Length: 316
View 1 (spheres, rainbow, N blue to C red):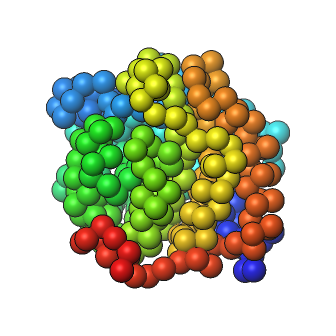
View 2 (cartoon, rainbow, N blue to C red):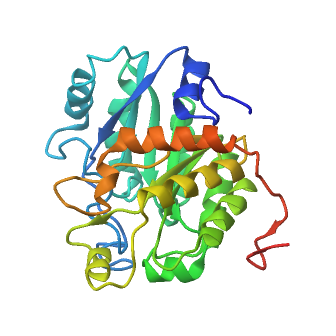
View 3 (spheres, rainbow, N blue to C red):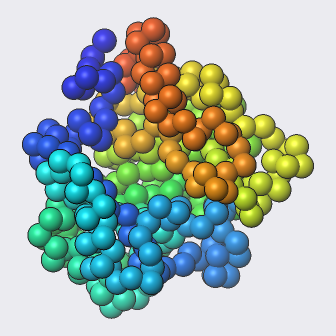
């Protein structure tokens, strides 16, 4: 079994230590943006699972970015950090005129303790002006862009009201890679109506893309979302812990070795979490995943198949 450090997969922790000689911690920021899927440009209310732009753990948007960075670093002083990642997390962080983007990005690029700037956004919010702006910032510090894909299957994308076609994602990845920016894809496991084969098809398809990282996210049902209404109406079931552990191990086995794994489960706001309740025991879940990998002898890429035909949406 191939190992990356102490783990059978290429973790973000391993990769950061390899590049920077130590651990970098994320400072999650809320720059006060919204989303075209919430303000009426594409739709209202966001994706069916969205509870607040994925920014539940970000800084306080009433504070300036400078203040959020300082508060975030101060809250991490108990850890022995080699540096920090400024993570523009809440909502769509390229959804504004470039003058506004410059105003909110500049503090991170000026801060001496910030080594990397990571920007979460949608692939349909990367016009030419934004790409040029990101290219200029990439010359100053490494820039990562995190794109919320969730699934390659258009039927699921329509159901969760993602608001863009798969071709938009592939175009965004290509344009970002042309300017040397690392791309991280966000995938949700356990979306309503998706089978294990569906989810593995997403992983296999992503193996053929020029991606540098992936976040594998357990589906959380959060209060005041459309997904919560579906769940409470009995329209779908969430994964059990045992099902998720087996699924995530299969995903790791099928995932290409060139992609860094940034996340294996994820957190939901406990005060608003409806299901699955077991997901709040994050260390227990991670320990179960590591145990299952060891028992099954699975390491990243050991099950990879390169015969997936994305044109027919099938393995061949």
